[in-house]
Length: 291
Ligand code: FAD
Image (cartoon, rainbow, N blue to C red; front, side, top):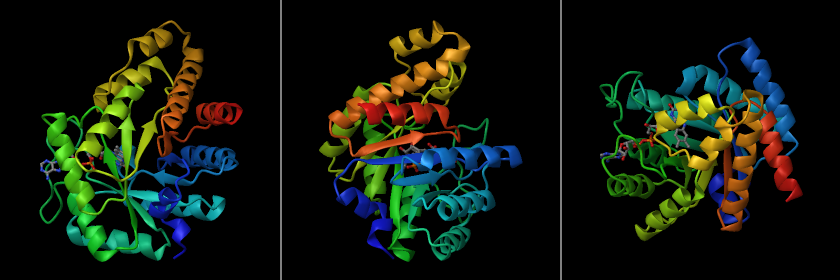
């Protein structure tokens, strides 16, 4: 394996990284849109791209299918996500074997969410309850994989306090994670506080900020409710006072300013939740080129 393929080594080079997140489409039209988006954004040469697993209907088969497509058609370094939802340890080992055989070098290791309508995550018999168990498994059986994990600047919704969540994050990092990608946030101070708190707990791996270019006021309200992320008053007012057709531009400009601020403050790069759409991401990346 070429060292460059492992995101662990990419971070070690010290230059800010830029990554994009896609999700496996549900139908043919969605597949076409994803390919067009990937083609458009490939000209910006992201350091890596990731593709979700399970979230929003993606399955083991579609994540693998589109991970391969993104790698083969566009030459991206692709990091497939993997969750513990509905899988036994043995099934997870099989999936990891498939990813390794297909030539992937990095995995985003996640627990996954409880099913819709349920608040508590219940592992299946022979499965895992927390992401740190998945990280340990990868480390034991596939030590060459670079491992990303999720982090929550405004606390994971299930955790009773930020301190508890950070202690659990530390367990996940000690199990062998190489870097953290954060949940979306709209106020950079949340990220800076999270980094400071993580460092004070001896979590020293890179923390890549995850940014969502807001597409509409309705969408961001839904996302903030789901992730329990704070919507700053100023962004709320900007969106509320914009016509529907201008809200995506407001969202992209907000994300662009967030990224500029984060990079200026020394963040190890940024991760964009591109949602298989290119317009907002293009606006942001072009804005960064001009900056
Ligand atoms: P964990 O790290 O296991 O944490 C879950 C909860 O359990 C937290 O409250 C934590 O504090 C607590 N906890 C952890 N360890 C312990 C312990 N030892 N004892 C007690 N409590 C503990 N979801 C998908 O379905 N598919 C995706 O592709 C996907 N991609 C994502 C990408 C990123 C960057 C992020 C941030 C999230 C993503 N998610 C995805 C959502 C994620 O699955 C959910 O947020 C999920 O609820 C938690 O996953 P986790 O891996 O952070 O879990």
